[in-house]
Length: 311
Image (cartoon, rainbow, N blue to C red; front, side, top):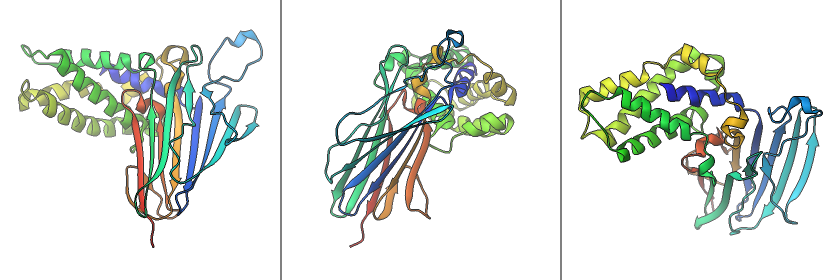
C-alpha cells in the first residue's frame, strides 16, 4: 500500500522535539501543572556548512507572572520547564504551542482543564489540535490512500467522492494512531522488529478496513468484493516494505516538523479512577498517555480521566 510507505517514513523525524507534562489534582480541586519542552540540536534544520548550529525554535511559550520557568542545556538538548498552580474551577489553559520552524505558524496546540463535574467527581481533560490544517503532513497520505483504494476496486465499481473522503479520512486517522499512539502503538516495533510489526499491523489494519467498508460502502461492495479489496490493500504490508519506508525522504523541510513532537502526558487524580481513555498505573495511581502529535493532525486528540474522591 503506497500510502503506508509515506506514513511509516515519518518515523525518521521522531526525537526532534518532545514534551512531557504532569498534572497533580488535589482533593479540593486545585491543581498543579508542570510541562517540559525538550529541543534537540540535531533536528536536521538549516545548512550544516553555515557554521555553528543554533537551537531550533519548534515551540512558542505561554507568558504571564503565574508561570515559573527554568532552562537547562546539555551538549545536544535544551529543556524548558514551565510550571504553575491553578485554582479549582479555573478556566482551561494552553501551555504546549508548536510552530513551523520556517513559517512560524502554529501547528500544534493543547487545551487543558480540570473541573468538578458532580460533587466529589473530578475530570481531567486535554485536547491536542492542529490549528493549521493547510500545513498537514498527512494530506499526501489521504491522496495516496484514495489512489490505492481506486486501484483495488473490482471492475465496474466506482465510489462517489464523499464516500472516498469518508473512508480515506477514517483509515488514515486509524493508521496514524495505530503507528503513533496514544493506543498500544507500533512505532517501537517498526524501528526494531519490522517483520513482527508487519504481522501485528496486518491484523489491526484488516479489522480497521473491514469496519470502515461495512459502515461506509456496504451498498457498493458485497462481502466477497469487500474481502478482495482488503486483501489487495494489505498485500504490500510486510517487513521489507516497512524497512524500505524508513529509507524514504522524510526531512523536516518537506514534512513539517510540528507534526512529529513526541508527547507524554500524565495526571495524578485525588480519588479512584472511574473512567479514562488512558492507561492507569495501579501502583502510582497515575493515568498516562504517550503518542506523537501527528495523531492529532486530521482529528483532535482528546485525553480524559475521571475520578471519585472518597468522603
